Length: 302
Image (cartoon, rainbow, N blue to C red):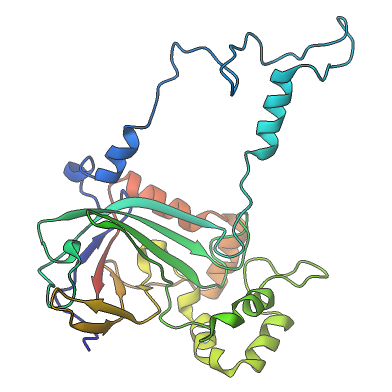
């Protein structure tokens, strides 16, 4: 069972790791362009196609009278407003991501029959999403928490999702404990504290009652829980996966992402100050790096 490959495939992330001359070769982005439409020259219409002459003033009973419920344009506009927000996910609500590409270093047919891992000339579009776990969408980037590291590969054979974290282990072994774990790490129900991190009584109660979480607690209380940049943290598939080659031979593997910039963390004092000064510190760092052409890059190994 291989545990590491020196000729591991290479990951180029985030519109990131795309070199400028390849920025327009991302097939996924090209497919999205086909669905974009230009509204220039088109009249504003309702969902049923009725042309709208005025969407800034409701129908009223007289010049100064109350608004009338018979104004279906107003009702549709308000209904759309009420429904345009999708409720955030329970965990990993705060995230940021970018498009990029993946290109294998070599042919790994001895491990898998997946085409994108066999052709070193093949460029596979990817999308990566980084996230915190405990906090809501409006929480800070530099809290002490696990970071989600999820990559979607848009392969010729279909989409392959490699969901992971920036830590190689997890708090539980049996999925039936997951609701209990999430309830424990979320804020206390009577005062909605803390937000973003977990170091409160319900969390430590869970840890004390579930000894299998001890290993993960060591990771969560280490510097790995406060990365300096999303571009400077490792990623792990966490689970053990089973790859099957064309001959039907199976191999058990674990996926590891290694950042080309190395692994760097914040000091605890830095993390706390940044949480107050710039809650968007890490997503801003990723965005600005890509905007200036300093594309992040990871190598994928098994």
